[in-house]
Length: 542
Image (cartoon, rainbow, N blue to C red; front, side, top):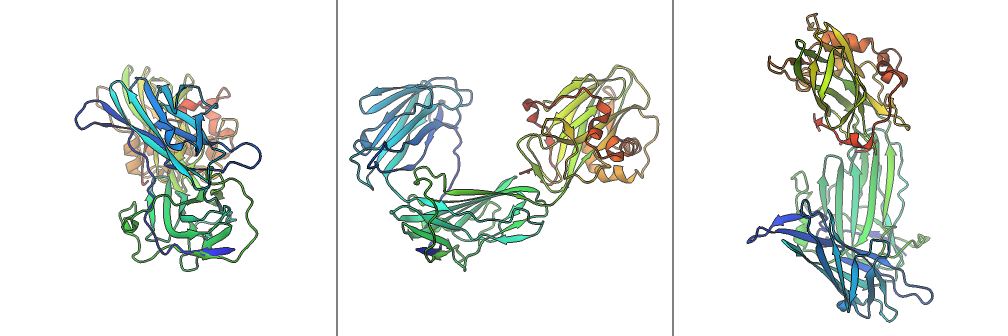
Protein backbone atom coordinates (compact mmCIF):
# COMPACT_ATOMS: atom_id res chain seq x y z
CA UNK A 1 0.00 0.00 0.00
CA UNK A 2 1.07 3.57 -0.60
CA UNK A 3 1.00 6.19 2.13
CA UNK A 4 1.57 9.90 2.69
CA UNK A 5 4.43 10.71 4.99
CA UNK A 6 3.30 12.94 7.78
CA UNK A 7 6.20 14.38 9.67
CA UNK A 8 3.81 15.99 12.16
CA UNK A 9 5.31 14.45 15.25
CA UNK A 10 8.98 15.24 15.21
CA UNK A 11 10.80 13.19 17.79
CA UNK A 12 13.90 15.33 17.59
CA UNK A 13 16.86 15.96 15.43
CA UNK A 14 19.50 13.57 14.19
CA UNK A 15 22.67 15.55 14.41
CA UNK A 16 25.34 14.62 11.87
CA UNK A 17 28.84 15.88 12.52
CA UNK A 18 32.44 15.12 13.10
CA UNK A 19 34.24 15.43 16.40
CA UNK A 20 37.53 17.22 16.63
CA UNK A 21 40.10 14.43 16.42
CA UNK A 22 42.35 15.54 19.22
CA UNK A 23 41.80 17.32 22.50
CA UNK A 24 43.84 17.84 25.61
CA UNK A 25 42.86 15.73 28.60
CA UNK A 26 41.75 17.75 31.61
CA UNK A 27 44.45 16.43 33.91
CA UNK A 28 47.08 15.23 31.46
CA UNK A 29 49.25 16.56 28.67
CA UNK A 30 48.60 13.42 26.63
CA UNK A 31 46.40 13.86 23.56
CA UNK A 32 42.96 12.24 23.52
CA UNK A 33 41.83 10.58 20.27
CA UNK A 34 38.25 9.60 19.53
CA UNK A 35 37.58 6.27 17.85
CA UNK A 36 34.76 6.66 15.35
CA UNK A 37 32.50 3.94 13.99
CA UNK A 38 28.90 3.33 12.92
CA UNK A 39 26.47 3.54 15.83
CA UNK A 40 24.27 0.73 14.48
CA UNK A 41 24.10 -1.63 11.52
CA UNK A 42 21.45 -4.07 10.34
CA UNK A 43 22.49 -7.49 9.06
CA UNK A 44 20.53 -9.41 6.51
CA UNK A 45 19.16 -12.62 8.10
CA UNK A 46 20.99 -15.83 7.27
CA UNK A 47 19.52 -17.03 3.95
CA UNK A 48 17.82 -20.39 3.44
CA UNK A 49 20.32 -21.11 0.68
CA UNK A 50 23.70 -19.66 -0.10
CA UNK A 51 25.99 -17.59 2.08
CA UNK A 52 25.05 -14.68 4.34
CA UNK A 53 25.71 -11.16 3.04
CA UNK A 54 28.65 -9.45 4.78
CA UNK A 55 28.46 -5.85 5.97
CA UNK A 56 31.52 -3.65 6.46
CA UNK A 57 32.17 -2.41 10.00
CA UNK A 58 35.04 0.05 10.41
CA UNK A 59 36.56 1.86 13.38
CA UNK A 60 39.15 4.58 12.82
CA UNK A 61 40.66 7.56 14.58
CA UNK A 62 39.64 10.68 12.68
CA UNK A 63 43.14 12.20 12.54
CA UNK A 64 46.21 11.67 14.71
CA UNK A 65 48.08 14.69 13.37
CA UNK A 66 51.77 14.57 14.23
CA UNK A 67 51.38 11.75 16.75
CA UNK A 68 53.53 8.94 15.38
CA UNK A 69 53.00 6.18 17.92
CA UNK A 70 51.48 2.74 17.34
CA UNK A 71 47.93 2.00 18.49
CA UNK A 72 46.55 -1.31 19.78
CA UNK A 73 42.83 -1.88 19.16
CA UNK A 74 40.85 -4.61 20.93
CA UNK A 75 37.58 -5.77 19.35
CA UNK A 76 35.28 -7.46 21.89
CA UNK A 77 32.92 -9.85 20.05
CA UNK A 78 31.48 -11.65 23.09
CA UNK A 79 28.21 -9.61 23.19
CA UNK A 80 27.32 -10.71 19.63
CA UNK A 81 28.08 -14.42 20.08
CA UNK A 82 25.34 -16.47 18.40
CA UNK A 83 24.04 -13.32 16.69
CA UNK A 84 26.76 -12.24 14.29
CA UNK A 85 30.17 -13.36 13.09
CA UNK A 86 32.71 -10.52 13.14
CA UNK A 87 36.06 -10.93 11.40
CA UNK A 88 38.82 -8.78 9.99
CA UNK A 89 38.11 -7.69 6.43
CA UNK A 90 40.17 -9.56 3.84
CA UNK A 91 40.02 -6.49 1.58
CA UNK A 92 42.24 -4.42 3.94
CA UNK A 93 45.85 -4.97 5.08
CA UNK A 94 45.88 -7.64 7.78
CA UNK A 95 46.75 -6.29 11.23
CA UNK A 96 44.70 -8.41 13.68
CA UNK A 97 45.19 -11.70 15.54
CA UNK A 98 42.48 -13.89 17.11
CA UNK A 99 42.40 -14.11 20.91
CA UNK A 100 39.31 -16.04 21.96
CA UNK A 101 36.28 -13.80 21.54
CA UNK A 102 38.55 -10.83 20.89
CA UNK A 103 40.58 -9.46 18.00
CA UNK A 104 43.84 -7.71 18.84
CA UNK A 105 44.88 -5.28 16.10
CA UNK A 106 47.87 -2.94 15.74
CA UNK A 107 48.09 0.06 13.42
CA UNK A 108 49.66 3.49 13.02
CA UNK A 109 49.53 6.36 10.58
CA UNK A 110 47.29 9.40 9.98
CA UNK A 111 44.01 7.43 10.42
CA UNK A 112 44.79 4.20 12.27
CA UNK A 113 42.00 1.76 12.97
CA UNK A 114 40.53 -1.61 12.07
CA UNK A 115 38.30 -2.75 9.17
CA UNK A 116 35.89 -5.61 9.89
CA UNK A 117 33.03 -7.50 8.25
CA UNK A 118 29.96 -8.86 10.02
CA UNK A 119 27.48 -11.54 8.91
CA UNK A 120 24.41 -12.99 10.60
CA UNK A 121 24.84 -16.33 12.37
CA UNK A 122 22.65 -19.16 11.08
CA UNK A 123 20.82 -19.58 14.38
CA UNK A 124 20.22 -15.84 14.93
CA UNK A 125 16.57 -14.81 15.12
CA UNK A 126 15.30 -11.75 13.27
CA UNK A 127 15.31 -8.77 15.61
CA UNK A 128 18.16 -10.12 17.78
CA UNK A 129 20.92 -7.59 18.49
CA UNK A 130 24.25 -7.20 20.25
CA UNK A 131 27.01 -4.62 20.54
CA UNK A 132 30.61 -4.82 19.37
CA UNK A 133 32.97 -2.65 21.40
CA UNK A 134 36.40 -1.50 20.26
CA UNK A 135 38.90 0.00 22.68
CA UNK A 136 42.31 1.45 21.92
CA UNK A 137 45.59 2.13 23.68
CA UNK A 138 48.83 3.89 22.74
CA UNK A 139 51.87 5.01 24.69
CA UNK A 140 51.50 8.72 25.41
CA UNK A 141 47.87 8.99 24.29
CA UNK A 142 44.33 8.17 25.36
CA UNK A 143 41.75 6.60 23.05
CA UNK A 144 38.00 6.84 23.67
CA UNK A 145 36.16 3.59 22.78
CA UNK A 146 33.51 3.07 20.11
CA UNK A 147 30.52 0.73 19.93
CA UNK A 148 28.40 -0.57 17.06
CA UNK A 149 25.08 -2.34 17.63
CA UNK A 150 24.45 -5.18 15.17
CA UNK A 151 20.83 -6.14 14.57
CA UNK A 152 19.46 -9.02 12.54
CA UNK A 153 17.01 -7.71 9.97
CA UNK A 154 15.44 -4.26 9.90
CA UNK A 155 13.74 -1.80 7.59
CA UNK A 156 14.89 -1.39 3.98
CA UNK A 157 14.07 2.12 2.84
CA UNK A 158 14.42 2.87 -0.86
CA UNK A 159 14.28 6.45 -2.12
CA UNK A 160 12.28 7.00 -5.31
CA UNK A 161 13.76 8.96 -8.21
CA UNK A 162 12.26 12.45 -8.38
CA UNK A 163 12.73 12.91 -12.11
CA UNK A 164 13.80 16.53 -11.64
CA UNK A 165 14.07 19.00 -14.49
CA UNK A 166 17.81 19.09 -15.20
CA UNK A 167 18.03 22.52 -16.87
CA UNK A 168 16.03 24.99 -14.76
CA UNK A 169 16.51 28.70 -15.45
CA UNK A 170 17.90 31.04 -12.78
CA UNK A 171 15.03 31.87 -10.44
CA UNK A 172 12.94 28.84 -11.51
CA UNK A 173 11.42 26.69 -8.78
CA UNK A 174 10.26 23.06 -9.00
CA UNK A 175 8.39 20.85 -6.56
CA UNK A 176 10.11 17.99 -4.73
CA UNK A 177 7.48 15.22 -4.53
CA UNK A 178 9.70 13.02 -2.37
CA UNK A 179 8.60 9.40 -2.03
CA UNK A 180 10.18 6.26 -0.60
CA UNK A 181 9.31 2.62 -0.01
CA UNK A 182 10.02 0.27 2.86
CA UNK A 183 10.90 -2.98 1.08
CA UNK A 184 11.37 -4.95 4.31
CA UNK A 185 8.75 -6.79 6.32
CA UNK A 186 9.90 -4.86 9.42
CA UNK A 187 8.54 -1.39 10.14
CA UNK A 188 10.76 1.66 10.57
CA UNK A 189 10.15 3.44 13.88
CA UNK A 190 10.61 6.89 12.43
CA UNK A 191 12.69 8.09 9.48
CA UNK A 192 15.42 10.62 8.80
CA UNK A 193 15.21 12.66 5.60
CA UNK A 194 18.51 14.18 4.44
CA UNK A 195 18.74 16.79 1.67
CA UNK A 196 21.86 18.45 0.28
CA UNK A 197 21.81 21.25 -2.29
CA UNK A 198 24.89 22.93 -3.73
CA UNK A 199 25.44 26.66 -3.46
CA UNK A 200 23.37 27.71 -6.48
CA UNK A 201 20.23 25.89 -5.28
CA UNK A 202 17.78 27.00 -2.61
CA UNK A 203 15.34 25.09 -0.37
CA UNK A 204 12.85 27.85 0.55
CA UNK A 205 10.63 26.02 3.06
CA UNK A 206 11.53 25.75 6.75
CA UNK A 207 10.09 23.18 9.16
CA UNK A 208 10.43 22.77 12.92
CA UNK A 209 11.49 19.15 12.72
CA UNK A 210 14.38 19.95 10.38
CA UNK A 211 17.82 21.42 10.95
CA UNK A 212 19.55 23.58 8.35
CA UNK A 213 23.29 23.98 7.95
CA UNK A 214 24.76 26.20 5.24
CA UNK A 215 28.43 26.20 4.29
CA UNK A 216 30.26 28.09 1.56
CA UNK A 217 29.36 25.47 -1.03
CA UNK A 218 26.16 23.73 0.07
CA UNK A 219 23.09 23.62 2.29
CA UNK A 220 22.37 20.45 4.27
CA UNK A 221 18.94 19.72 5.73
CA UNK A 222 18.15 16.90 8.17
CA UNK A 223 14.50 16.20 9.09
CA UNK A 224 13.28 13.60 11.57
CA UNK A 225 9.80 12.09 11.60
CA UNK A 226 8.25 9.94 14.31
CA UNK A 227 5.78 7.21 13.55
CA UNK A 228 5.65 3.69 12.20
CA UNK A 229 6.54 3.26 8.53
CA UNK A 230 5.21 -0.16 7.66
CA UNK A 231 6.96 -2.81 5.63
CA UNK A 232 5.97 -3.26 1.99
CA UNK A 233 4.44 0.24 1.91
CA UNK A 234 5.28 3.42 -0.01
CA UNK A 235 5.23 6.95 1.42
CA UNK A 236 5.24 10.45 -0.07
CA UNK A 237 5.27 14.01 1.27
CA UNK A 238 1.86 15.19 2.43
CA UNK A 239 0.24 18.14 0.72
CA UNK A 240 0.43 20.30 3.84
CA UNK A 241 4.23 20.08 3.96
CA UNK A 242 5.58 20.67 0.48
CA UNK A 243 9.22 21.08 -0.52
CA UNK A 244 10.61 23.01 -3.47
CA UNK A 245 14.01 23.42 -5.12
CA UNK A 246 14.88 26.81 -6.60
CA UNK A 247 17.75 27.67 -8.92
CA UNK A 248 19.43 30.83 -7.66
CA UNK A 249 20.80 33.72 -9.68
CA UNK A 250 24.30 32.30 -9.07
CA UNK A 251 23.45 28.75 -10.25
CA UNK A 252 25.42 27.02 -13.00
CA UNK A 253 26.29 23.33 -12.66
CA UNK A 254 24.58 22.13 -9.50
CA UNK A 255 23.88 18.93 -7.57
CA UNK A 256 20.98 17.90 -5.34
CA UNK A 257 21.07 14.83 -3.12
CA UNK A 258 18.10 13.36 -1.25
CA UNK A 259 18.08 10.31 1.03
CA UNK A 260 15.88 8.48 3.52
CA UNK A 261 17.12 6.43 6.48
CA UNK A 262 15.58 4.63 9.47
CA UNK A 263 15.54 6.73 12.62
CA UNK A 264 17.93 5.60 15.33
CA UNK A 265 17.56 6.17 19.07
CA UNK A 266 14.61 8.40 19.97
CA UNK A 267 15.50 12.06 20.40
CA UNK A 268 13.90 14.62 22.68
CA UNK A 269 11.17 16.61 20.99
CA UNK A 270 12.58 19.82 22.45
CA UNK A 271 15.64 19.43 20.26
CA UNK A 272 13.46 19.91 17.19
CA UNK A 273 13.34 23.68 17.65
CA UNK A 274 17.01 24.49 17.39
CA UNK A 275 17.94 27.54 15.30
CA UNK A 276 19.30 26.95 11.83
CA UNK A 277 22.92 27.58 10.81
CA UNK A 278 22.24 31.24 10.05
CA UNK A 279 21.02 31.76 13.60
CA UNK A 280 17.34 32.20 12.71
CA UNK A 281 14.79 29.88 14.29
CA UNK A 282 12.53 27.87 12.03
CA UNK A 283 8.88 28.80 11.60
CA UNK A 284 7.06 27.96 14.82
CA UNK A 285 4.49 25.21 14.63
CA UNK A 286 5.20 24.17 11.04
CA UNK A 287 6.38 20.63 10.43
CA UNK A 288 7.14 18.54 7.41
CA UNK A 289 4.52 15.79 7.09
CA UNK A 290 3.70 12.77 4.97
CA UNK A 291 0.85 10.35 4.65
CA UNK A 292 0.18 6.87 3.38
CA UNK A 293 -0.47 6.49 -0.35
CA UNK A 294 -2.40 3.99 -2.38
CA UNK A 295 -0.37 0.91 -3.32
CA UNK A 296 1.77 1.18 -6.42
CA UNK A 297 4.28 -1.08 -8.14
CA UNK A 298 7.10 -1.67 -5.64
CA UNK A 299 10.57 -0.42 -6.37
CA UNK A 300 13.08 -3.18 -7.09
CA UNK A 301 14.89 -4.47 -4.03
CA UNK A 302 18.45 -3.21 -4.16
CA UNK A 303 19.78 -3.95 -0.67
CA UNK A 304 18.55 -4.08 2.90
CA UNK A 305 19.41 -1.15 5.12
CA UNK A 306 22.51 -2.73 6.25
CA UNK A 307 23.99 -1.38 3.08
CA UNK A 308 21.98 1.75 2.32
CA UNK A 309 23.04 2.06 -1.29
CA UNK A 310 19.48 2.66 -2.47
CA UNK A 311 18.55 5.13 0.23
CA UNK A 312 19.86 8.17 -1.61
CA UNK A 313 19.54 9.75 -5.03
CA UNK A 314 21.60 12.48 -6.65
CA UNK A 315 20.47 14.79 -9.45
CA UNK A 316 22.89 16.93 -11.50
CA UNK A 317 21.39 20.16 -12.81
CA UNK A 318 22.82 22.41 -15.52
CA UNK A 319 21.46 25.93 -15.25
CA UNK A 320 21.83 28.19 -18.33
CA UNK A 321 23.95 30.89 -16.74
CA UNK A 322 27.30 32.65 -17.10
CA UNK A 323 30.34 33.48 -15.00
CA UNK A 324 32.72 36.25 -16.03
CA UNK A 325 36.39 35.67 -15.22
CA UNK A 326 38.46 38.84 -15.49
CA UNK A 327 42.22 39.34 -15.19
CA UNK A 328 43.46 42.41 -13.32
CA UNK A 329 46.25 44.63 -14.66
CA UNK A 330 49.56 44.74 -12.82
CA UNK A 331 52.42 47.21 -12.86
CA UNK A 332 55.85 46.91 -11.21
CA UNK A 333 58.48 49.61 -10.91
CA UNK A 334 62.08 49.64 -9.83
CA UNK A 335 65.71 50.08 -10.81
CA UNK A 336 67.88 47.18 -11.91
CA UNK A 337 68.52 44.83 -8.99
CA UNK A 338 65.32 45.81 -7.15
CA UNK A 339 63.22 43.07 -5.54
CA UNK A 340 59.48 43.64 -5.80
CA UNK A 341 56.46 41.97 -4.19
CA UNK A 342 53.54 41.70 -6.59
CA UNK A 343 50.16 39.95 -6.52
CA UNK A 344 48.83 38.49 -9.75
CA UNK A 345 45.05 38.72 -9.49
CA UNK A 346 41.85 37.76 -11.27
CA UNK A 347 38.20 37.74 -10.28
CA UNK A 348 35.00 35.87 -11.00
CA UNK A 349 32.49 38.66 -11.58
CA UNK A 350 29.65 36.12 -11.60
CA UNK A 351 26.77 35.92 -11.52
CA UNK A 352 27.40 32.14 -11.26
CA UNK A 353 29.88 30.35 -9.04
CA UNK A 354 32.09 27.62 -10.53
CA UNK A 355 33.17 24.22 -9.23
CA UNK A 356 34.40 20.90 -10.57
CA UNK A 357 36.86 18.09 -10.00
CA UNK A 358 39.96 19.97 -11.21
CA UNK A 359 41.02 23.61 -11.10
CA UNK A 360 38.04 25.94 -11.58
CA UNK A 361 40.36 28.43 -13.28
CA UNK A 362 43.99 28.84 -14.36
CA UNK A 363 45.92 32.08 -14.66
CA UNK A 364 48.85 32.37 -17.10
CA UNK A 365 51.49 35.00 -16.31
CA UNK A 366 53.87 36.19 -19.05
CA UNK A 367 56.69 38.20 -17.44
CA UNK A 368 57.76 41.54 -18.91
CA UNK A 369 61.29 41.75 -20.31
CA UNK A 370 63.92 42.17 -17.62
CA UNK A 371 61.75 40.70 -14.83
CA UNK A 372 62.59 37.38 -13.11
CA UNK A 373 60.66 35.39 -10.49
CA UNK A 374 62.40 35.00 -7.13
CA UNK A 375 59.62 33.33 -5.13
CA UNK A 376 56.68 31.43 -6.68
CA UNK A 377 53.32 30.82 -4.95
CA UNK A 378 52.53 27.19 -4.14
CA UNK A 379 49.69 27.26 -6.66
CA UNK A 380 51.92 28.35 -9.54
CA UNK A 381 54.51 26.62 -11.71
CA UNK A 382 57.02 27.70 -14.32
CA UNK A 383 55.99 26.50 -17.78
CA UNK A 384 58.68 28.38 -19.67
CA UNK A 385 61.39 30.75 -18.39
CA UNK A 386 59.09 33.76 -18.79
CA UNK A 387 55.73 31.96 -18.40
CA UNK A 388 54.11 30.85 -15.12
CA UNK A 389 50.78 29.07 -14.73
CA UNK A 390 48.70 29.32 -11.55
CA UNK A 391 45.74 27.08 -10.73
CA UNK A 392 42.87 27.60 -8.33
CA UNK A 393 41.18 24.91 -6.30
CA UNK A 394 38.07 23.18 -7.65
CA UNK A 395 35.74 25.95 -6.42
CA UNK A 396 35.60 29.67 -7.23
CA UNK A 397 32.67 31.59 -5.78
CA UNK A 398 30.82 34.39 -7.48
CA UNK A 399 32.57 37.70 -6.81
CA UNK A 400 35.62 35.86 -5.47
CA UNK A 401 39.07 37.29 -6.02
CA UNK A 402 41.99 35.04 -6.92
CA UNK A 403 45.36 36.28 -5.66
CA UNK A 404 48.79 34.75 -6.33
CA UNK A 405 51.60 36.57 -4.49
CA UNK A 406 54.94 36.59 -6.32
CA UNK A 407 58.33 38.00 -5.37
CA UNK A 408 60.04 39.42 -8.47
CA UNK A 409 63.44 40.83 -9.28
CA UNK A 410 63.95 43.55 -11.87
CA UNK A 411 67.21 42.38 -13.38
CA UNK A 412 67.15 44.99 -16.12
CA UNK A 413 65.15 48.21 -16.03
CA UNK A 414 63.41 48.12 -19.42
CA UNK A 415 60.96 51.00 -19.94
CA UNK A 416 57.40 50.01 -20.80
CA UNK A 417 58.25 46.30 -20.81
CA UNK A 418 55.08 44.34 -21.59
CA UNK A 419 53.84 41.04 -20.27
CA UNK A 420 50.33 39.65 -19.83
CA UNK A 421 47.98 38.04 -17.30
CA UNK A 422 45.35 35.70 -18.79
CA UNK A 423 42.59 33.82 -16.94
CA UNK A 424 40.62 30.85 -18.28
CA UNK A 425 40.02 27.14 -17.76
CA UNK A 426 41.41 23.80 -18.88
CA UNK A 427 40.11 21.52 -21.61
CA UNK A 428 39.79 17.71 -21.36
CA UNK A 429 43.49 17.34 -22.23
CA UNK A 430 44.59 19.79 -19.56
CA UNK A 431 45.34 22.59 -22.02
CA UNK A 432 44.27 26.19 -21.30
CA UNK A 433 41.06 27.43 -22.89
CA UNK A 434 38.39 30.05 -22.40
CA UNK A 435 35.52 28.87 -20.18
CA UNK A 436 32.47 28.00 -22.26
CA UNK A 437 30.25 29.86 -19.79
CA UNK A 438 32.39 33.04 -19.93
CA UNK A 439 30.78 35.21 -22.61
CA UNK A 440 32.76 38.40 -21.87
CA UNK A 441 35.97 38.10 -23.90
CA UNK A 442 37.41 41.57 -23.45
CA UNK A 443 38.57 41.16 -19.86
CA UNK A 444 40.14 37.68 -19.82
CA UNK A 445 43.54 39.23 -20.44
CA UNK A 446 45.20 42.21 -18.76
CA UNK A 447 48.55 43.94 -19.18
CA UNK A 448 51.54 43.21 -16.93
CA UNK A 449 53.79 46.25 -17.31
CA UNK A 450 57.25 46.96 -15.90
CA UNK A 451 58.54 50.53 -15.48
CA UNK A 452 55.83 52.36 -17.48
CA UNK A 453 56.65 55.82 -18.75
CA UNK A 454 53.08 56.98 -19.37
CA UNK A 455 50.96 58.45 -16.59
CA UNK A 456 47.80 56.44 -15.92
CA UNK A 457 44.60 58.14 -17.02
CA UNK A 458 41.57 58.43 -14.80
CA UNK A 459 39.21 57.15 -17.47
CA UNK A 460 40.31 53.68 -18.56
CA UNK A 461 38.74 51.87 -21.45
CA UNK A 462 35.44 50.02 -20.89
CA UNK A 463 37.21 46.66 -20.90
CA UNK A 464 39.62 47.74 -18.16
CA UNK A 465 37.00 49.24 -15.90
CA UNK A 466 34.80 46.18 -16.26
CA UNK A 467 37.31 43.75 -14.83
CA UNK A 468 38.97 45.57 -11.96
CA UNK A 469 37.32 47.77 -9.39
CA UNK A 470 39.55 50.29 -7.56
CA UNK A 471 39.37 48.25 -4.36
CA UNK A 472 40.19 45.04 -6.17
CA UNK A 473 43.19 46.60 -7.89
CA UNK A 474 44.48 47.93 -4.62
CA UNK A 475 44.14 44.53 -2.99
CA UNK A 476 45.78 42.69 -5.83
CA UNK A 477 48.81 44.96 -6.11
CA UNK A 478 49.88 46.49 -2.80
CA UNK A 479 52.69 49.03 -2.74
CA UNK A 480 56.05 48.04 -1.35
CA UNK A 481 58.68 50.16 0.34
CA UNK A 482 61.01 52.29 -1.74
CA UNK A 483 63.93 50.03 -0.91
CA UNK A 484 62.25 47.04 -2.52
CA UNK A 485 60.41 48.66 -5.40
CA UNK A 486 56.65 48.94 -5.73
CA UNK A 487 53.64 47.47 -7.47
CA UNK A 488 50.30 48.98 -8.37
CA UNK A 489 47.13 47.86 -10.11
CA UNK A 490 45.99 51.39 -10.93
CA UNK A 491 47.83 51.67 -14.25
CA UNK A 492 44.59 51.46 -16.15
CA UNK A 493 45.88 52.80 -19.43
CA UNK A 494 48.49 50.08 -19.75
CA UNK A 495 45.98 47.45 -18.70
CA UNK A 496 43.36 48.62 -21.11
CA UNK A 497 45.82 48.58 -23.95
CA UNK A 498 46.99 45.11 -23.06
CA UNK A 499 43.47 43.82 -22.84
CA UNK A 500 41.95 45.42 -25.88
CA UNK A 501 44.83 44.19 -28.01
CA UNK A 502 44.93 40.72 -26.45
CA UNK A 503 44.13 37.58 -28.41
CA UNK A 504 41.00 36.77 -26.42
CA UNK A 505 39.58 40.20 -27.09
CA UNK A 506 40.08 39.93 -30.82
CA UNK A 507 39.28 36.28 -31.49
CA UNK A 508 37.69 34.60 -28.47
CA UNK A 509 39.30 31.34 -29.56
CA UNK A 510 40.83 28.62 -27.41
CA UNK A 511 44.21 29.28 -28.95
CA UNK A 512 43.92 32.93 -27.95
CA UNK A 513 44.21 32.10 -24.25
CA UNK A 514 47.78 30.97 -24.69
CA UNK A 515 48.74 32.98 -27.76
CA UNK A 516 51.40 34.96 -25.91
CA UNK A 517 52.91 31.89 -24.29
CA UNK A 518 54.02 30.01 -27.41
CA UNK A 519 53.52 26.40 -28.34
CA UNK A 520 55.41 24.61 -25.56
CA UNK A 521 52.79 24.63 -22.81
CA UNK A 522 51.97 21.57 -20.71
CA UNK A 523 49.08 20.67 -18.43
CA UNK A 524 48.84 21.76 -14.83
CA UNK A 525 49.73 18.98 -12.37
CA UNK A 526 47.65 17.92 -9.40
CA UNK A 527 49.92 19.84 -7.04
CA UNK A 528 48.68 23.09 -8.54
CA UNK A 529 45.17 22.57 -7.23
CA UNK A 530 46.19 24.41 -4.07
CA UNK A 531 45.32 28.07 -4.30
CA UNK A 532 45.96 31.42 -2.66
CA UNK A 533 42.53 33.03 -2.79
CA UNK A 534 41.29 36.32 -1.49
CA UNK A 535 37.51 36.27 -1.28
CA UNK A 536 35.06 38.93 -2.25
CA UNK A 537 31.42 38.41 -1.32
CA UNK A 538 31.38 35.04 -0.73
CA UNK A 539 31.86 28.29 -3.58
CA UNK A 540 30.17 24.44 -5.46
CA UNK A 541 29.73 22.66 -8.98
CA UNK A 542 31.06 23.23 -12.51
